Image (tube, rainbow, N blue to C red):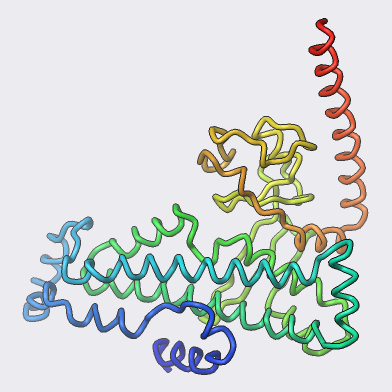
Length: 330
């Protein structure tokens, strides 16, 4: 079965779930836009040798006004809507799973009247499928664009999605969703095992990695190594550029104290990997991933927690000593 038909069946299947609330790639319509393009039709009438020569003659940066007027602008909007919907839905789902204080008490009380865990499992399944299917649809339609126009504009557009942080498979919320699924694996419920089986994680590998199989028989690998301390991420944060770091390591790179947090980082502070500025203030705290590390690497997590507490106390003492000296004038 062709992907277009598979994607259409998926949309129809999920129309009572996510479809009314989330955007989808208009795969079928965008494919019609490509078919309506006449700028490349003269190439269809030449022989193979002439076609190859013509393809070599075409500039790799050349655009097609007939397609580009609607194609890339609409695909960018769709990708932005999809990543926004996905992030907000995952954030809400994880808020129900990891809560504290009065919120946790109210959620525990609500479980007496409704099966929230079952609803969370179903929501997790839908979100995994939603991310995978839309990501594949974007990749395939861009590949189709390059094939039709003998260009690399589709490939370049995908790089643009990555640079603007709206590439769905690079979203830190997808890693959090994977950690959430794996954290549910402690139950005997068959459905919980089914959803957690869509992800796998080996924290003892070199490097530690989380894997997600995609419907097109590819595996998506997420490296869980902090690029600063070169160890498995502890108390991890994902910067807006998508790179993962331990909180203490990220604070050190941003020149802020651990107890101050990344929100106090300067807008000029850059990611140690990609050197992009302004990526710290809206960093995502990866609570589910931290819980996964805590459960699967207890000794390592306990050791890192003790070391971080010692460092926080040291930094706090030095900070207030300096403030005291400043206030009294010596």
